Length: 75
Image 1 (cartoon, rainbow, N blue to C red):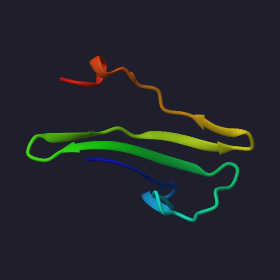
Image 2: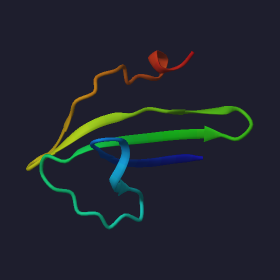
Image 3: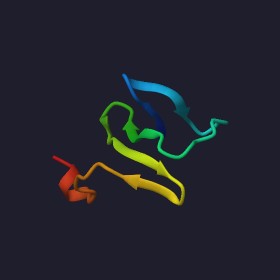
């Protein structure tokens, strides 16, 4: 099973706006968001990574930097 969710980042982690597949939130320029895609395999385990982005007028700016290839992300 895979999931993708996210939320706003401010005083604490996990605050509005909450980003889900059924979200009706309207994002505004300069909001800071945490995007957390994940995959879970029942009985085995899972993996979740976290990216922090800033909403910009023409898209988003990724401000976290980590390896993104599968070999670097697995043990």
